[in-house]
Amino acid sequence: MNVSYTLLSDEELFALVREGNDEQAFRALFRRYDKRLYAYCLRALGSSDDAKDAFQTIAMTVFDKRAAFTDGNFAAWVFTIARNLCLKAIRQRKHNVEITEDVLTSHDDEPQHSDDFMLRAALRESIGKLSDEFREVLELRYFDELSYDEIADILGIGESLAKIRVFRAKKQLQSMLSPLLGELR
Amino acid sequence: MTNEELLAGFLDRSLTEDDLLELEARASASPELARELRELVAMESRIKQAAPAVLFPTAFLATVENSIAASLAAAAVTAGVAGAATGISSWLPLASAAVLGVAGVGTAIYFIAATPSKTVAPSPSTPVVAPAPSVAPQPPQPTTNPIEQPPASRRETAVRTADAPARPTSITNDQANLQRQNPPTALERARIRFEQSEGLSRVQAGLALASIDKEQADAILLSVQMVADENSLRQYQAEVRARRAALASPANAATLYRDAIRYGTNVVPPSVIDEWRRRLDAIGN
Image (cartoon, rainbow over all chains, first blue to last red):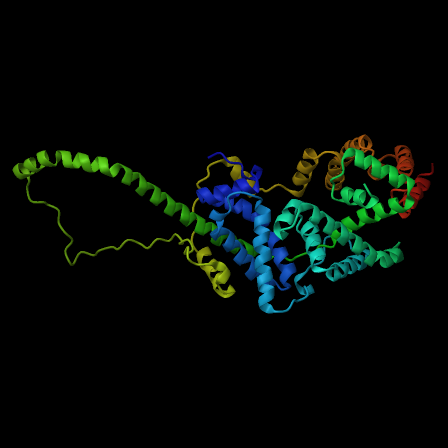
């Protein structure tokens, strides 16, 4: 078989996994998503142990249900599974937890400006204050780097509504941060 | 279109060329709109930078990957055996007919020529070697729903199956293997993005690429400048000239900073324009 895996789309790779149990296609696909999904779980659940459990469940679910995905957008499908599992885990815990700093690292390789640090911290805090629907759509767009149609699929809303929510979320952030931005200017 | 619709369209990259021109015209006429546009663009890049940096548990991720890969390998083996069995079964009726067809003749020959079998059954004292158990991990049971399993058992499953030896790859393509072993670097990814994009996206991808590829930065920035000029993207027309100025000789840098200031007025933050003016003054032109 003459296959250059890096040139294949997610859906093409997954078809190889589903129909041919192709191990190398699986590995190529796994590496495209493992860090994004783990980061998503960590953000949603707040602790690395919970994120690991959720990540493993997602991976096993994708593997077990591979026959069920025959068309559509793979990223949207995987993130929908991730979202449902994380929501379920949160419901089981009955309370939300804040993301803990011990599982986060700073950008050690980047020079840190105190202004940048302040702004980033303020921005994270402001994102946390957004309503769930705005925060979620913003994080999916900018942290998980999903397209608007993928976000729309995951949330079960129209693409235009996804765009509107992202825009409004940004406007809200803008107004929340304007005093600080004024000071830093 | 309202100003807000134009702003939203600009930020989600869905404006047509005419809409972009309309937005630029309105932004030129309204300092307030221009400021809002600037601030929202800046906000967008700040949000991206605000993504929490995560310490990835790479060993754990590799364990999960190996575990599922091993299950897939086992499934491939099982499918192969099943496929072979299917092949045999389709020939079975023909083979049976052939056997039955010769059975009558065969029986006669047997009764004439048969001799007692010389095959010796193993004596009780002969050591019997049982077939070694398969080392291939078994795929998960189809009735098991991993969502319902407790986390601890899931992790044990992954670790247990990961202990199994890896199946040799069935892919022989050297290029594919090489690419898997050497996934594209950030520079290669940035270059691909730059080469495959157009318009505003090409400008943004080019600026990112120029930040990584220091050796080719000037040539990349020149190419970006042409795209920004073609599309009248004033903010980027200014930014790319300032970036080029930082790399250029003093004489060229002065011209580039002057152009950057001209394009950037009203679309780039005043503090940035001031900085470019300071650099221009420092050059002494």
